[in-house]
Length: 115
Image (cartoon, rainbow, N blue to C red; front, side, top):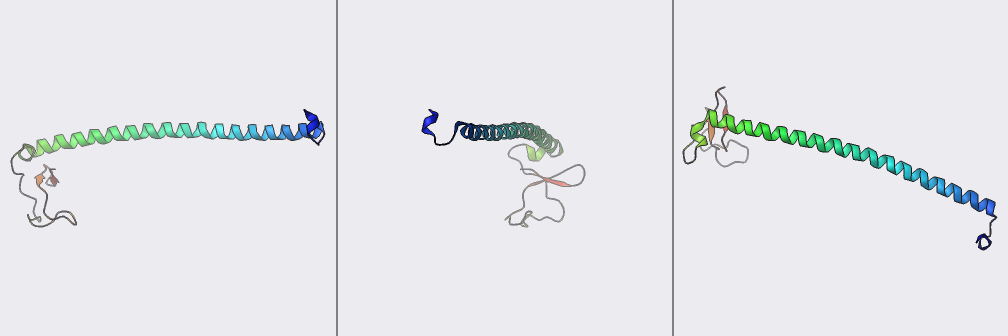
């Protein structure tokens, strides 16, 4: 088998060993990088799930507070309370909007949109 190569077996062995060692080094670097990225992905998934649960909880609390603060607007088929002072029915409440959304007064004196 070695007779088909023109270089001496000693030189071939050195070249093959260097190539094998370089390949192993590259493979180990890639394995370490993959393991590190797996840990980052795991941490990001946990963080995302935690924030998603927090957002759902806060959204549910907001719905409950809106129902308590403005039960008339929460029930179907009835008109919401009058908009707060300074907002008229024809005035857009949001930039680019065409009409003011329904508002519900909150206990702290502020107004909340009941959507």
